[in-house]
Each structure stands twice: as structure tokens, then as C-alpha cells.
Length: 264
Image (cartoon, rainbow, N blue to C red; front, side, top):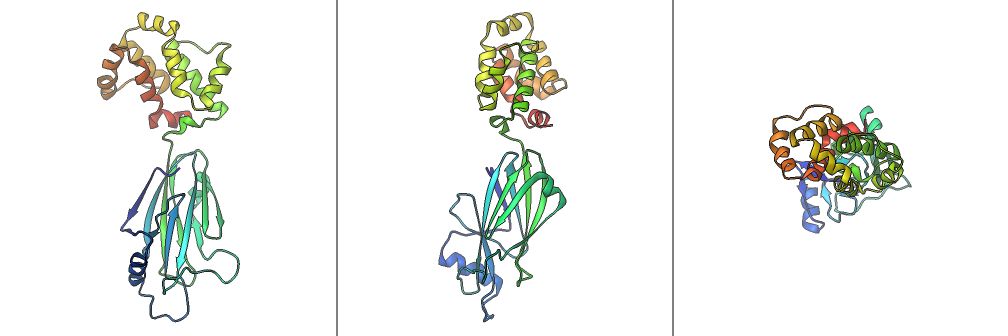
């Protein structure tokens, strides 16, 4: 799912005659007699709003590493009418750079571009061309992050996360009940798993044996493979002193730093 769309120098218009005609006046297309593509609007997913692209527009799409996103392209001629190709096929051409092919799969179905990310983070550019109007092109910058992907884990990722949680919170490897934990993590019950561990008698024994500072250091060593920095100590140590280990662990494992490690 698209988390945010940033349009640079974008004329964002609602669907209506005034907005459409404004976009066409910017293109200076009225002197042409034969119908041709004068301007292009895009619609993202289920969004009902149309966004009219300006010539040589730069558009940034921010996607999740587990997203499947549809972008609809609607072409209009110089008279404000929706432009249709004379024969079956797309009236749009796209060029994807090499990095895009490593980050996502894509499929063009007439006026609909489907992007399915591959679970990797990174950024790339692809360009939209409209044959017959060399001035009408746009560059799309795709930025892919891993925020929120703990809710959709593979079996291997869930097993890795569960093992790290056991090491960080209980200072041991998982036992014979671990398959049930992995299943819960796979279906998105991450908070519930952490809550159950931090409410267990075994974890409370760990709290009694280890000071807040020592627990924080272990959490960071196991989960992030480093020592806590000053901001982490200032933010998390008071919480641990107040017995809020659950909040600290959730904050760490939902951070981009940890999620990137989980998806390595």
C-alpha cells in the first residue's frame, strides 16, 4: 500500500471541467486538428482523485517493501475528451532502469500499471513516454522502505524474529513450543507474542536478575548488534526502570534499523 505521494511542481486538480481545461491550456494543444494525447492524469489505487501530470513532471512514489500497487493512467486529447487508442494495446510507453527490475515486478495492462515489490528496500526511476507527444513525459521516483512489514512475514522471517526475541528477552534459545510462536508471528500477532513473553514468570525472573541498564544493553546487542547510543539510553532507560520492557522491545523491533536486519 502507498504510504505517501510527493508531487514536485504538481498541479493537483479534482476531476472536473475547470481542472481539465486548465491542464490543457498549460499544454498549448488547441491548435492541433487531429486528436492526439495532450495531457495525462493518474489515479493511485482506489483513490478517486485524478492528478494531472505536467510536461517533464517528477513524481515520487513511496511504497512498502511488501506492496502491490496499481497506477491508472488516463489520457486526454486537446479537446478535453478521453483519448483511446485505435487498436488494442497501451498508448503509454515506460522505461525502467536496471535497479527497478531488482526492486519490483511490473505489468502493464492497457492503462493500468501494476507494481509488486519484492521485499527489498531501495530507490529507482522509471519514465513515462507518450508516443506522438515528445514533450509529454514524466519521471517516477520509486522509494521502497520496510516500515510496517512485521505484519507480513515469511516462515523464515518469523522464525528469525522469534529466535531474536527469545534471546533478547529470556536470554536463551527457543524450546519445543516455538512452532506455535512462529505461527503467531507469521499471521501478524507480533505485539501479542512480545506481550506474552514479557508477562511470563521466566521473563520476570530475568527482570529481577538484571538491572534496567543491563537489559537495555542486551536488547540492543541481540536485536541491533550494537550498544545503545545516548538517545536510546535517554529514551528507553526510564521506561525499563518503570517496567515497560514491552514498549521498549516493540519500539526497537519496529524500527527501520531492525527491520532492515530482519529482511537481510
